[in-house]
Image (tube, rainbow, N blue to C red; front, side, top):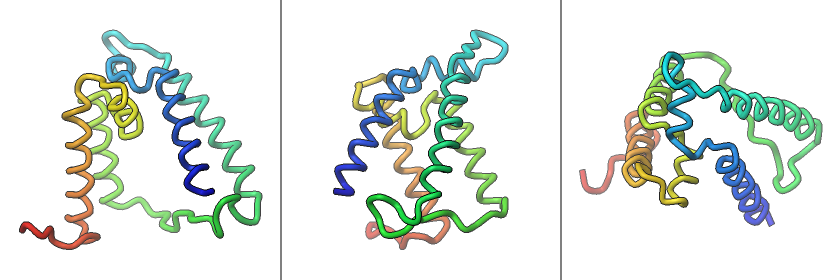
Amino acid sequence: MSFLVNLLLGLLFGIGLVVSGMSDPAKVVNFLDLFGTWDPSLAFVMGGAVVVAFVGYRLVLARPAPVTGGEFHLPTQTEIDAPLLGGAAVFGIGWGLSGFCPGPALTALGLAAPGTLAFVPAMFVGMWAARYASGRIGKPSFA
């Protein structure tokens, strides 16, 4: 049951990304180009997402337990440290250079959007490298 719910929610998220234009890297880059061809429409998409997430979290966390799981898994770390700032900087630089962030990149990959065949593998390599550098995974078998 949990797999089906997650699948349906992922499909809903992907459809929302496509409808909002977030899977189009040119639209994202234009949003970030404040002094050129600035396109403010994604600000409304993000604002709507923040409102929906705010209300959703309030409703979900008012429940004693998740609908499809045993307990909530919420972050416990609240401090802002160097790995958090470094990761945010790398994420922002990658988003600005490519026009993709991970969710829309996977959606755009399904749409055969240009650039995704280079971005998505590089994203997975970067995710692996970050985990490897932090010691959260062991040395690769080929090293």
